[in-house]
Length: 130
Image (cartoon, rainbow, N blue to C red):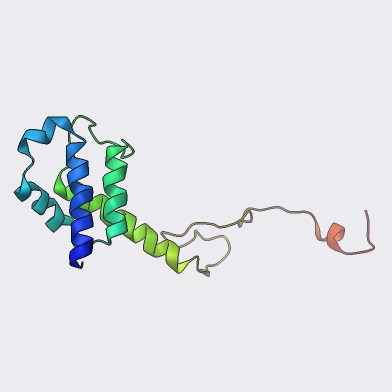
């Protein structure tokens, strides 16, 4: 992370910590630096998104009365960075035998699954009706 990104990450962290009044007395430069150390391997956009999610109360299971711990912020930033990476790569086709479960971690895209029972072939052949 370059110095400019570090500055923006520290700004996001300081805003996060300031958003939780119960922890304001314990906030100092050392605290902010500890949070930065926890997330310095993450892209800036993931750090900012994680801070915003905590500030907006969008993190399931988080006690809204207290700021998240540095490891908890890092875990969310890691997850958001991984999700962004996966989305940037786009979907990929995965092959598996019909009747078997799809591989772990895959998601069906589209309306057809192995259980799909569409119109009969007779209706799909032009000129034939039954």
